[in-house]
Image 1 (cartoon, one colour):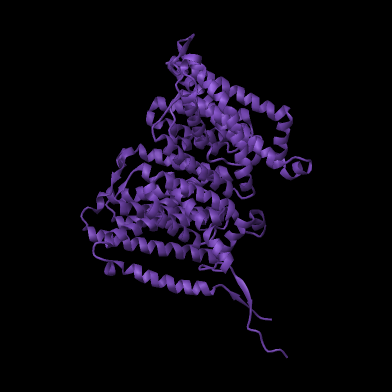
Image 2 (tube, rainbow over the protein chains, first blue to last red; image 1 turned 180 degrees about the horizontal axis):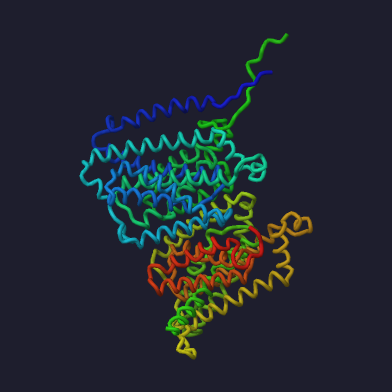
Length: 338
Length: 297
């Protein structure tokens, strides 16, 4: 009997169409948004986009690469600072400096991995946190970028506010789409399959000829690139950077909560997580400490009782998969029996 | 010059004694069940605030003066033991396994919960336990060295706690159970041990150390709700420098960390903690298994 390799689902085709429509609507937002609201909407989108990219990278690292890091803020802040230094001190166009900042974070990940990969499991997590603290304290002692109190992105001074906002928004949108596409294509590729094998059983994967160490390093560098991109983008929109804001462990804390609540180890997870996070912060962030307390409790409850997260639960119940990465064998249409 | 150097080293060793108390509980929990408690620092801060509240209701300093906080600690210990036992049985046992993610997320979530709960109840102000002057008293040693009485007590307690844990592990039934489930949980269970209960007793023991650390931290200096993560990093660095699974190693690691930080502070106050982190990373490069490793990760 002939079988056919099936790599898409009905939900994924419908989802792609819906995604394209959403993208078209988002891309034309400056044209149709109400006069007074456009600026604030775009600003909010840039912020949510940074959270989403950052959370997606944490998901790639922990959910697919099996590396639970509490130190991804090192790359977030590094990307932000490099963007700002290139713009302010080297005269590079800040919009061009955003991908350069991400690239710098990826390069920075190489020496960091040399240290971090000496630890495993839970100690890897705290070790990466120590490294992030070292980077924070180092930048806090650098007077050229304002030391502990930080500095402003002055390179954008000459540009008109509306132009700047539109360009930042367009860039954020492009980065989100590119990040989702990158992760999706990567996970569907042969290397993505190798990564899933490593996550499920490292020893077995290695015995099948997969270069486990090289693969982990690749994922770590890609995640650093994405986190650096999110950081550079965030501080392009924010116009002001300080070590405490750039290297705050809260970036990673929120990413962990989003990914765990949305569903770890699936592309939809961080997307659902960021939407939950954004909606709940709109309603509850006035409650400050209670809001954070609730988020922490929710993450604990989800981890213990709903390991698959929100999307995993939906997927199990309804078989929904917007970004199918698995390969399924389907029998061909049944032929007439002789 | 020599005097200044020895003063810095003595101060560093005394600071390291406190760090050892931060770290021993972490070392114990990791050694027995490979659990990385990312809320270690927050539990220390939590116990410090519990002690501060307890001090407020205990009869005034007229009765016991400088020793009143130690009475408070004695009252706190059984509570901490019970709390640790229940935490492990009800919450943490369910997160153990080959995958480190569940226990990391749960303890990290606990860390956020504790920080915000303390912030809500006590506000962000730093607080301390009144020691009726004990925290400023010092004795002059020959050679012109001044040693604070309270820091010396802390260091002595750290040494006693380290020796006590080592004895507990080597000489008692409970210690044998700890080592057995650490080496091979399944075989230990076949031999009749209830691993879940042994784990709970290990966490309960760790919480005794956490309570001691919290009370002494609040007596020596101040505590604020957001202090936890930094204490966790110090504890972690001491454990890694010393080598996993060795309590004497953890003590030495903590003392080294204390001295390094003190030297850093002496050179420039902005670089003290940074110097400690760098020393930790240096050990990681040169000797990733730590100075005195015993168990394997």
